[in-house]
Length: 226
Image (cartoon, rainbow, N blue to C red):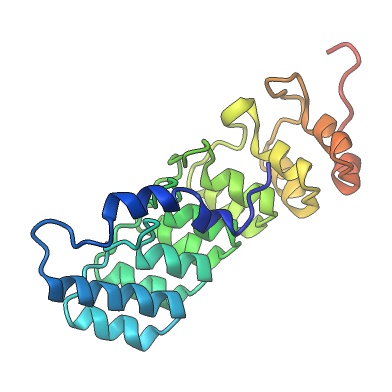
C-alpha cells in the first residue's frame, strides 16, 4: 500500500525521456523552451523569485519536464504554498497530471500539505482523479496519516465510505499504516468499519495483519457471524 517519495519521479521517467527526446515540441520556439525550462528549474530549486521572473518573461505555467511534472506539481511536492498560489494565479492547470497520473492534489495530499490541498480544492481540483496504479488523493492522504487533508477532502464531498481499487476504503488505508488520528476522524465522519475489501478483510483485519496496534484498538473486531 505504501508509495515512497522516490516513486514520484521514478515512474514513467524512461517513457517520457524517449517521447520527448530532449527536443522542443512542434511549433515551440527555442526561446520559449528556454523560458519554460527556467520556470521548471526555478520551481525545482525552490527559487520563487526565479519562478516569478520566468512567468513575467512569458513561461507557460503548464510546461512539463521529462517526467511530466509541471511547476505546480513540483511546488505541491515541496509543500510550497506561496509558489503554488503564484502558479495558480497565473493560470496553472490544477488537474494537470504527470506521466504516472500524479496530480497536484495527490502530491499535496501525500505530503500532508493541507494548506495547498485547500487551495487546490478552492480552484476545483478533481478529487476523483486516479493515477496509473489506481490511487486517489484520499488514499494518499489516509495512508500517510494526513488527517487535515483527509478532512478537507471529506468537506469537499468525498464519500467517507467510497470503495477504491480492490474495494479498499480510506479507513482501511489508515488502518494499514496505523494512522490513529486519521482513523478517529474517519470514524467520527461515518466511516463503516464493517466494510470488507476484495479479500474479505475489514479495516480491523488489515490493522491486525500489518501489526498496526493503535489502529487495532480503535476499530471494532469482525462480527463472528458476519
